[in-house]
Image (cartoon, rainbow, N blue to C red; front, top):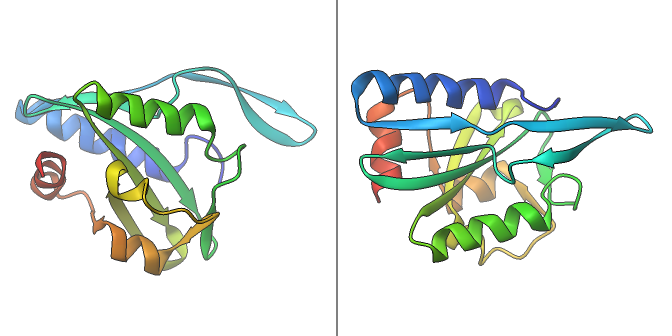
Length: 149
């Protein structure tokens, strides 16, 4: 799926709901993408997709999506820069999450970074994401509850 796809649009919709309800703010981080040899790579910018505060809790979100059966964790798809930032963000007192969308199964999961850090595979499937995380949709109350936990 292309960069800045449907998952990030969904999170941006949640961000609007958070702001309007006065319960938080999420900001999409800008990244400059370059096309090299038919592949798209980040050139510079923020190491995660969203940063914000939900009910006083600093949060960082990294979004990954696919139309296939699994999300690969290659360096070009989930870089060390992203992984390091999520870890450092938690060390600094914030909460970090990964959000995985498997469009083939019409499912989206939020996984706490601490839990994901224990998962040492080269990819993740819809089934494994369901085991590690919690399914979400546009329900803002559910999203807030996960961020607070």
